[in-house]
Length: 86
Image (tube, rainbow, N blue to C red; front, side, top):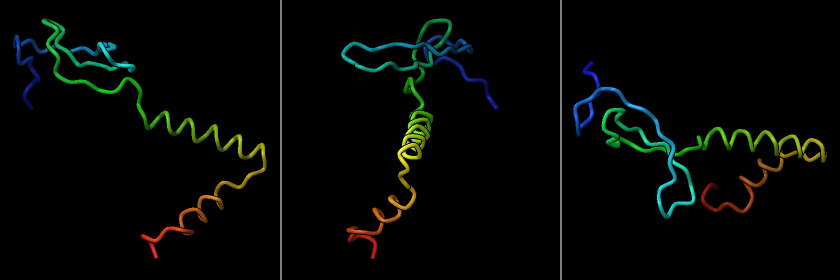
């Protein structure tokens, strides 16, 4: 497999750099050339899947402490009032 190279300078070492672009309320990670700083890609600073998994775990603990069965609540909300799935 060919080694990735910078489209700007041809260097083959890249790094992740954290940045908040002007006008943005969020941080991003930029994959950039370690030689010239040319940006090869951008991705979200936070992994949304990890955040949602953590939040789900916290909500389940709260529900358990309040003795709320969220599993049966989810099952009924999926079937009741949904005209798309008969």
